[in-house]
Length: 336
Image (cartoon, rainbow, N blue to C red; front, side):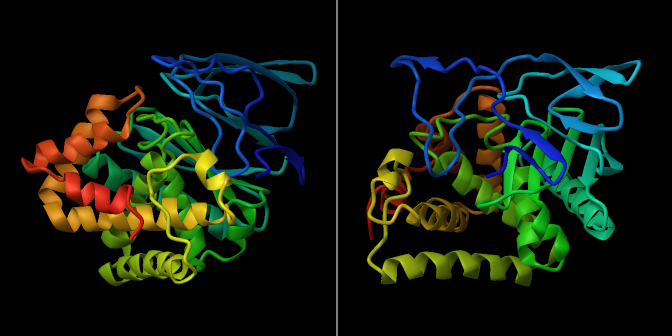
């Protein structure tokens, strides 16, 4: 994806240090890196990181800077974080920075020259999405949130705790819906992946489907209901295309399962689009009050922990006061 990479003067460092594997009732989780999806499954930890750079670079990273010490032509930054699943950093000499404040959170937009309007748009979308999600799911727990334009390939965005990337090529056209969707999507991952974790190898839908659906709330609440309906229509058309090709699959499958299919590319259409349609149907089934109450309970109960599908589904059953087993099975496990 270009997330451990030096390109166009931008150094992105994902997975740059040994990360302790998750240990659970099955032992150590040592899954091999997957060719699809995300391959980082981790517990939360507290980080203190010292980074020494030549002078002249602008640095963005997980956590917050505690100090900056210059000696000759070198600068040492000291960063610290609250409980997070990963520590990511990115830097470049050409980056420009815009900032705003949402409640007690500093929102920062890092962009490259020539993309001033897109840098401002990324800042505004991230800030408004943060306001919506704070109200709908529960408060964002960190004091900073960074959105960073980055030269990438084969991905529109990638999430990390307190910081996320949006592909620089999307900054060429801020009217392109992909720019808005990617920014809102990666912001939603701060709730579903960063704070509430899950096993991305066994149940990738648990964060990706929920993130895809809830990112649509930006359109619904900050743009227009018609814009949200257009997004839902896109999910439906993408999924129906798979059905027409005989490529429908259950939502709740592993990365290894999708990799083993004749066309592993159906992963995106099933996990993201069909998964988003599941949550849209669930919201219609239980109503807004129950739907958002369940998400708030799920977020509060599993913050900084690792959730299982049963935890999310139980939250909806508890909030609705009724069994949703058949509904879940029809969407998540059975091929229609």
